Image 1 (cartoon, helix red, strand yellow):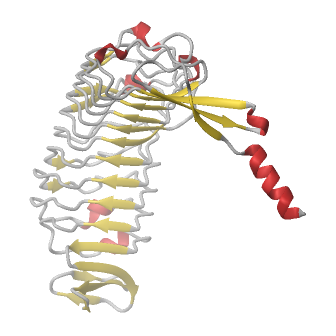
Image 2 (cartoon, rainbow, N blue to C red; image 1 turned 180 degrees about the vertical axis):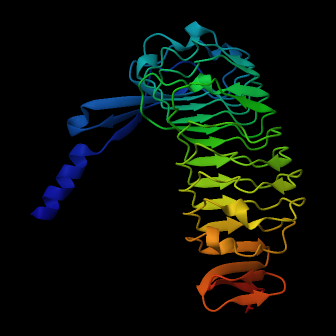
Image 3 (cartoon, one colour; image 1 turned 90 degrees about the vertical axis):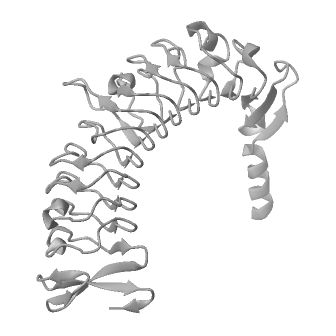
Length: 347
């Protein structure tokens, strides 16, 4: 009896997916019905590859997802994303078009928009506050032509949801931030594959994930990541010009758990105070970099470290013992030392 009741309840509260008859020509519409007796429904509209004349497009009143990717769109007028159906839009895909700019009011009417994909376009200009007032949870700006970006584009107007920002594969040269700007609830930012020459000033942004891979950063200065106390993951991999990391560069990242500095061939030496302040760091990756020796006393600054990858075939982890020395790894005088496994052999 209980099993029959369980089956009945699952049938009542399951959702139904079906096609919509009155869909824009060339598009595909799917309706998802939810709740008791299908009392609630949302529609997904797929218009990828239809062509540049697809917008503006009429969509069903209950549309939650709209795919306008790969349509050779060169611009999005403010009126193109307005009208019936857009008021319930939660996700919008504009990737793989030819968009070169985003105006301040382009997305202003999408009051429920949480996911926005603008990757693989030709974006060069993002107007200030173009994403403000939106409850965005994820923004993908990868593979564009952005050379500088002001964090004012994400100015918050009372929405507390975090924003995931992917800015990879752009031509970004610097990130601008106005002083006295209110904190931004951006949870994840991917700035990889740009032309940044310095670590951008992101102080006041509530980041948990930051990726700066593949940029033209030459040196990381003292306090470069100040104000990013919520950061859990930092990737500085594949920086072909990085040669210097100043002591105390990571100070303030007391909650950082993973630090990836692999594939940095010009990075040869590290002072132990480079790791000062990394109280929660658990994983450090230095594989395929120019670093072949770990600095003395570095474990004094890394009380939570679990593993260090020094080279591609050398993985180290912390242990407790009397002071220990190895000619390739270095000396630890605190009673803690690193055991390193080289090609399966523990040194």
